[in-house]
Image 1 (cartoon, rainbow, N blue to C red):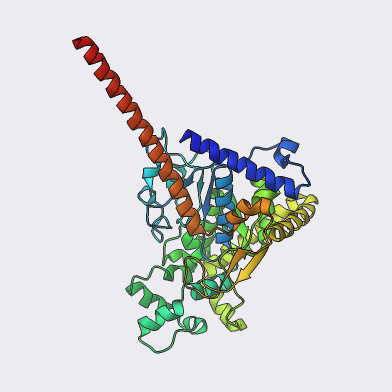
Image 2 (cartoon, rainbow, N blue to C red; image 1 turned 90 degrees about the horizontal axis):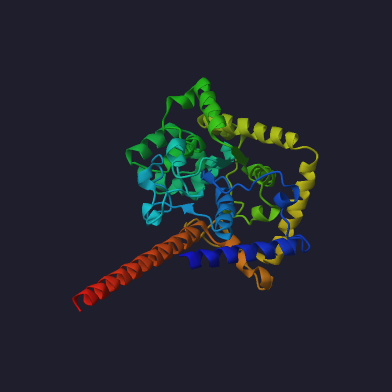
Length: 405
């Protein structure tokens, strides 16, 4: 296992050096090393909300874990989520990967899990930071509805010939919600203040109908979370995250994952009003942390826009170097044919092949990659233990023979 870790560490350092060299004109000194004012954050819990750009952020975090040889907390074998839609608990964690370790501490949590900060914190060092990402609830609920093919689901529940269109759902959302509840549908909570549901709000809570209770929950999240990224201002959010984590520009490079083609329902003002009333808790959540984002940008100072420009230039260079191509078809782990997939073209910079492979890797593939890695570690430890036991038995047998002789 030590050899395996050394190889991974060397590999991560090599890849990091290559990226830094290509996009810094040969300067391999990180911002942290240059300024010497902060320490790189490696312990992170990411509350992955649905259809908010979270898959793109997950790739950034998975890549950071791989390149820096960090341990990712994983869900039970065979699952890609921590028993979502149930609230997070220890029972949802694959504990076998902690065999033979002196503690059960991890560095990152990245996959879907509903917030339970006290239980999650048990798996991480004390300096762990909690982050999430949200978006405008109007576009969020429409994206969830189409991605999860809820129109076809409600068609089955209604025993009808055609699917229930998004607009029709919002003509009587309570009716459709009740039918889904009777069918024990797991997705329906995402259509009614789904972002707050991912952040720990009980489904069908009285909180959703009283602004005072909503604001109390928002204040609770303000105290529990270290950062809310905003999907509509993704690059700006990443610049703030970079500073919070003492990361480099290269750490936050990305291509978009699980992005849909521009197939969106036409929304008239009345429909938008209905959506915001039905998702008022998510609306207040979004408005609050969107304001927080812009307040932090103002506090960042004049250099913010310079940093944003630098980052976007590096992002363009990176996409060119990886020769990013857009393809049609379904996502790796979903049947939605409106999802955009990316792949490397024929002109990938040969030095950057390994980095480009990371940035194109899906979340499911990353989970499997870490599982193989940790399983290999366990196997190597077991083999080392067996060798040690065999050596001890042989030594004991030798001593017996010597004594008898």
